[in-house]
Image 1 (tube, rainbow, N blue to C red):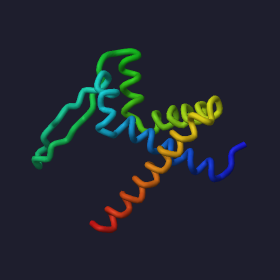
Image 2 (image 1 turned 45 degrees about the vertical axis):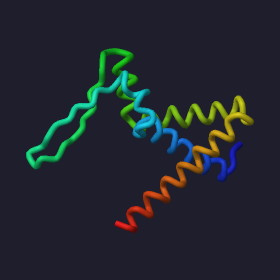
Image 3 (image 1 turned 30 degrees about the vertical axis):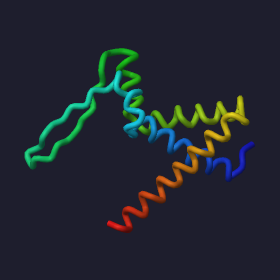
Image 4 (image 1 turned 90 degrees about the vertical axis):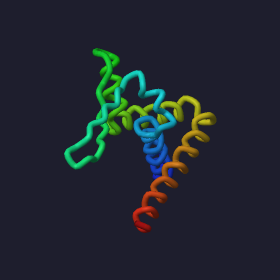
Length: 116
């Protein structure tokens, strides 16, 4: 049975791992085989970037998964929880680092909104 503190730590860790996989530039190499970025210039001159899934079948399915933070979040949460259940000594440091980074990222977003 997990405590409320453990749940909160898992929430922040899952949030950060999901953002790392779905949005961060450092993990673009993971998404690149499955996504094609298409740029379109709108009537107002603003450039918008759209994702197209590469391939069909499993490749397209993985592309869809990697473009959806809700979908990826479920798998990230499951991965972290199973890792913690199977190997707590190895998983806990990773979970804590992700949780700290996730919480720090949320604080940074709030600070930037207050400054703007």
